[in-house]
Length: 88
Image (cartoon, rainbow, N blue to C red; front, top):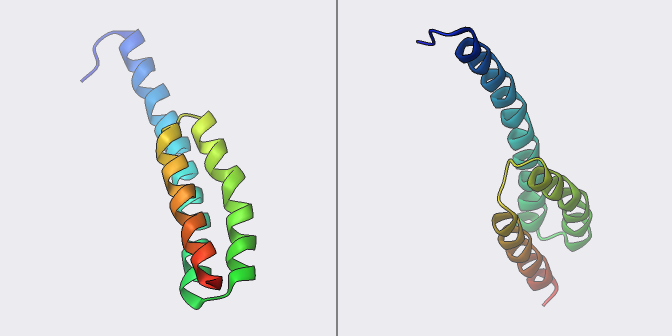
């Protein structure tokens, strides 16, 4: 348990930031799920549209520090490859 006033304040700050990060992570996962559903349905146009809307959300999560840059790059690369494989 925090004893000093500064430690108590840090506990409050961390709790607020955790809630914000949790919301951001959840939002990103929702966008990724929409892309996954479009890919599994085999609809390339819907998958492309979902991918285009998910990209800025993932990059925003990187800039806010929720995800690592290379993690997002890997996810986008793999999703892009799966979308391109639909037409082939």
